[in-house]
Image (cartoon, rainbow, N blue to C red; front, side, top):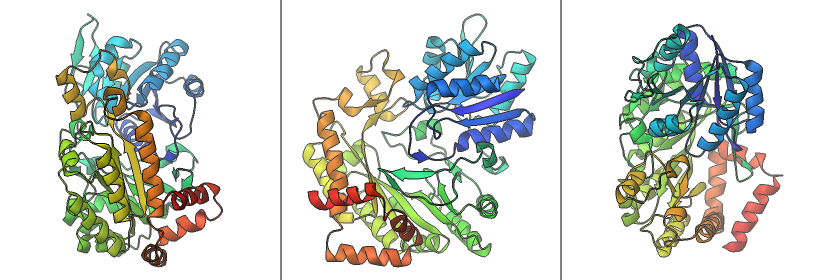
Length: 471
């Protein structure tokens, strides 16, 4: 059969390859030998009509799409258009939102035949066997569908235990599209760029995140050998920058050390980016990572308030975050920290304290977010238990100011976000800040590339000028 896999239409400057779809494509091709087409409408900034036209031109037997809560409604617009254009194409939906809202979706959107919950590398090829044979897929892991008698059939979500058994993603399926990352108009990656997944799942249960539920709090790593084998393939293909998209790359310290050792032994010279947890950021580990090419690390700090961190079930302290940032700097890494503003229990003074905390750490980059309330997260479950969820609320993303307008308005939170960014820029305006920046430029090649690549960028100059003025 001909199988088409697509991301939803969107407009994004975070152009990261759709690894999930590439893993599915690899499994389908290995298990069945089908003709598989991958269309990354998300990163290509396609419209609904453009994606429907692409699907119509391919005329697949089966169309599979993934969606998040943010992209659910636009995904439904696409699939409705596909059904009208190609009435015989079988439609399969997956992703986080589909996993947590499967019964509602199947009831409200009859043009969707099947939903695959969780990780579908095993379940999609098996479902295709049934579609081709015209049989009911009751033995498919993670499946939800409406049976011929009108009843709902569901199986628990599926997880892949042996990640080493999966084929490496075939990035050639994406064509010659140039991936990379631009933040607030400032390019942060240069040259041939991609992403990698070296583990899946999360053993923690942060209240704002659905990853724990999607993975049943089971963290599953690839072996160090498998990770470095893929890195070596990428290096030979000309890739020089790679983001590890794991939620918990540093979860197992010994594994990270083995990865770093193998990278050095094989002579792989790439600029690597990853996310770390503040509790797994010892100076000795970060120095080994830096020597293997890990030049950028991201920490989810979220708040400076212990009360707010407890509300999020973050299981870390501001002091631990400060130590992690200091260790990463001492190791010669660029450090990015992220923060969430707007918890229902959070005061304006606490949000301002978080902004001050970020300035005191003086990371090389910051990210501020307004709290989202998403299906599948513990926060959503709390709202459901309290009876504050409306019958149609599952269809869309909800910013905290929509559910708790009495705590802080949209205008107030957006003003605080702007203040956070401008204050962060201004925090470097000191003799010690300038000296630290110069030292970073001397020892970190990624820092030099970012600065050199943005010397003539008006967006970068505007951002810096705004921060210096507001400080």
